[in-house]
Amino acid sequence: GWCPLSPAGAQSPQILVEPPWTPAVLWDRVTLTCQGLGTSGATTWYKNGWTWWPNAPNKFTVYAEGIYECDRPGTGRSAPVSVVNGEWERLVLQVSAQTLLEGDTLKLRCRA
Image 1 (cartoon, rainbow, N blue to C red):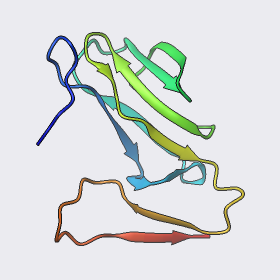
Image 2 (cartoon, rainbow, N blue to C red):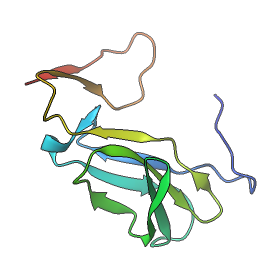
Image 3 (cartoon, helix red, strand yellow):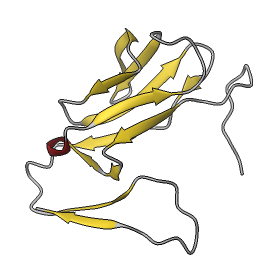
């Protein structure tokens, strides 16, 4: 498989979403964790493309909808994770956030 690499050759960080459903919805009390190489406690969080929380912890509970990314020194920025409010949607269809391969059983959940 292909993995995006930073200029230093280190693998970019990934965001772990708990509970592990996508889209992540605020009513689930979503926690994001920036996982990857780099200095712990030197995580920078981005929200909607802008620097939001520099020198932050690698884990926090989300209280506002948005598109979140993280960065640790020398590793580059993670792929974005979307967190939706859920207040205006009558139904939200969620899928397990785990990596899936063809033939895997897919878990879906419909929330109202």
